[in-house]
Length: 393
Image (cartoon, rainbow, N blue to C red; front, side):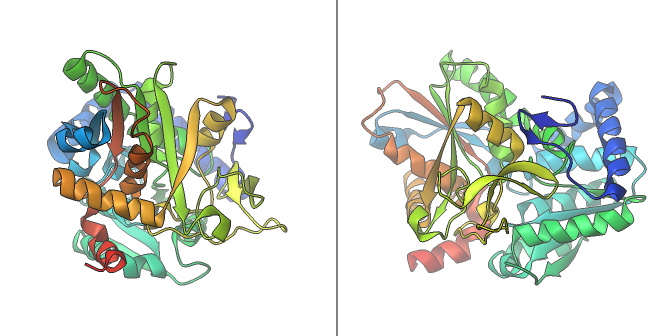
């Protein structure tokens, strides 16, 4: 990584001058916290005794028989609040308290990061306000209710596409005017430095655990690791432990929506003319944009993947060829959602279902003793209404 938060040509801090000092202070506090044994002890305690780490590694016996190779799930769906988002929320909330901040603000799409922020704030005695697009509020009502029940104020965002992109815009505006007593708890490996590095650090626990668990269970590393990619925090979280292992293939799955040719998708790496390097929300990365450089609206059945850009660390990993990025359409994700539910009794989040969809493409291509690890980033409770409507259940 270059100075000032660059990953090759990607990353950086493209923000208004008013935010440069708060970002520098945040970066310094983060670096200090990483070296602080008391900070790490308290975070470890929160993750273990409150969040429920380590999460389970589950062998899918029925699914493995059907596909012809071994499938393991890293069960972030079993974490308190139901998704990987709490790893980062607890880390950043604890950091905010260390910095004497009294208020947390956050953005959310699928609502899981908003819930994690609300829960972390309640646990650590902080005030929380969460920005959420009105489209996402409608399709993720249970999470809106959970945030409010935990004491957070949910601020509707009715502008633009009324989804995650617009929620981030409003959160950044808020932080520009309130940083003296407020910490912006950004939920993915996005945004200006130090957010991508900081979120990746707090999510790296996923990969470290999965690596240890597989070595204990199978005595070796997996042949492949698969994870969905929206902003990219769950995938970066699991990939980091295997980046230095050339024998482990890493695959990130983006939202193919109604298909790449339809233009109604969120696949930044699909190689379409509307995808290219640009600056959005303070970072230089791959962005879906029109001929005039304006951010394009996206589509996914999954609220958490419905975002026009991807974290700069992913852009670097793609440029280096270390991670292969593919996409799964809405129908493919819904089919995988049903498959895991019926085969293993595990209902995945629609985000995670995109990663699961890639498994079917590997049938007949791997040996029977091949090991494929899928990061199950969240559970599907929040998506039941959407999925049941789509599947006519």
